[in-house]
Image (cartoon, rainbow, N blue to C red):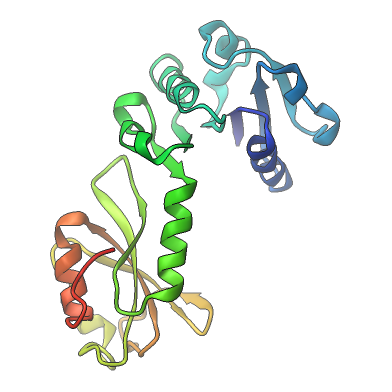
Length: 224
């Protein structure tokens, strides 16, 4: 897979290193000469240029990329880069970094963003997931649709403790996609049963989140 990354700062280089280690081709783009540190990752391609310019993206051959990542510290740059990659070069998948939570509403497919990554939101979700039992916590929003990835740790008093997974009648279009038990993730087994303390991961629309929480933890009955 070929991946372009706009922004060769600490975040961009860290992403690039992970991708290179996993066997992917990576191109790092940055207009700041001080950010071009090819010696830190010689396996990657490096380009000193402005990722907001069409000519730069054309020179980079971004139309041959499978994924375009906008990882600069400037939300405006990340939005413009994503929009150009998607609309002008038809990159199949775009991922954009959200630096300021107040701008998160802009990072949608209207701006060419397939997936937005907001560090403050992720950190908040992880904190909530770590300390709450019985609360439905929204971990991730899929911008190509209206679904969210949500998590709930099943409390001891839940009426669903001991229930056969195949007999669960989940509200609306909610889907149980994974169970984390004793620190290990497993696919749901229709013949298995739920246990107190199970971390349940669902894909569900926002409209059914409250009903899902009510079903699993009626004492709480709310989404984070």
